[in-house]
Every structure is written in C-alpha cells, then in structure tokens.
Length: 256
Image (cartoon, rainbow, N blue to C red; front, top):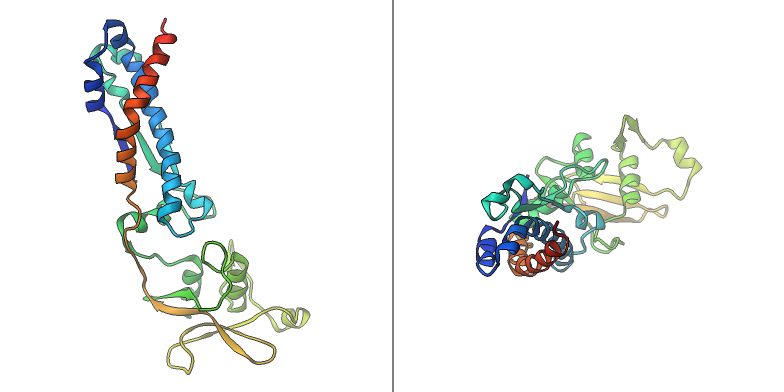
C-alpha cells in the first residue's frame, strides 16, 4: 500500500519553543487540527499537480488520492507535543468497484515500470489473438477521446466482433443474423503475425477498404513522471507551520 506520511515532529519541537504555558497546553489539539488540515490540502495540491505532470489524467485517476487523517487522543497531552496524533497520510485507493484502482494507474508513473495489460488486451489474450508479450496501441489516424484512448464503446464493439467480450458470464459474439440486422455495425478482424498486415485489430468497411485500429507493440515502459512523495513532502513542509499557527489560534479560542 503506497502512502505519503506527513510526520511533523521536528516542526512541532521548533514551534513549541516560542509558546507560553497556556499555548503549550493547547498544542496537542492544535497539532491534530494542523496535521489533518495539511493532509486535506495536500490532496488538492496533488490533484492539481497530477494535471501538470500526467498526460490527460482521467477524473477517476485524480480522485484516487485521499487523506487518512490522524485521530486526537486526549490522554497523550502530558507528552507535550501530541505524539500519538502527529501523523496523517495520503493514500491511493486500493479498490474501484468495476473499474481499475488508482494504485494501478499511479504506480507506473510514480515509480516507473512496465505497463500492465489492459482489460481488452487480457480478453484478446484469452482468445489467442494477442501474444503474452505483445500489447496494443491505437493506430495513427484513429479518433481518440480526451484521454488519448479509444472510447469504451469502441472497445466493446471490437471485443464483441472478435468473440472476446466476456463480462459477468455474458459472451457477446457477433452472429451472421445480428450482422444482417445492423448493416452499419463495424466489421473488425485480427491480423496475426506472419501475414501481409502488421499484427493488430483492423476494420473492414463495406467497400472492402481496410484500415488499422489497434496495432501490436512491444511492452511499453512508463518512465517516472510524477514525484508523488517529493511533491507531498515539500507541500507539507511549507504549509504545516502556517496551518499550525492558525490551528493554535483556533485551539485557544475554543479552549475550555
């Protein structure tokens, strides 16, 4: 589980030196407020930075970072600086329902690693179209969505035409009868290695014209493009002293 921890013990020690007795009593609660405020702000900061460092990230990817906030424990006051509540974390979502978890999107661009097979590639491998070491990329000239990919409906059409669309036990094989009912439906086929065409998915128009849709490529490798840990750490170091001063004023106003 990847996370960026916001450990502020050194900040609190330095901040504590200029406080009076009453302020020191409120410091644990102020620390609690400041840490959680900094973690929440760091999420927003990372979301903005992702748009700068990642090529057309999907909203789902941007929302994949969240703050795991610290908990305030009153019984630790006598330690002087709230040891038990001096850390919060930024987390990557581990689960995504029917989609792909954020950690799978973020890990390659944060650490740098070979790209994982996508869902349509896995489906085509199961049917024997795509080899275990081959991957697919949109062919030049294809209309892509705002994220640089074919649309989801286009992948469904391709997999259905190739007899590879299997979700929840449903197999959407294209039959001659269904094709005759819908003449506008795209006709796709897979060209394997050894033929006249470069391996990949092709579309055959009613006129007989053939054009590539997805072409086989070697396994892509993502370079490290997003310094998640460095960006988060630098933001915390900058904003924590500011949030700590504001939180102490808030703690003093609400002191009992």
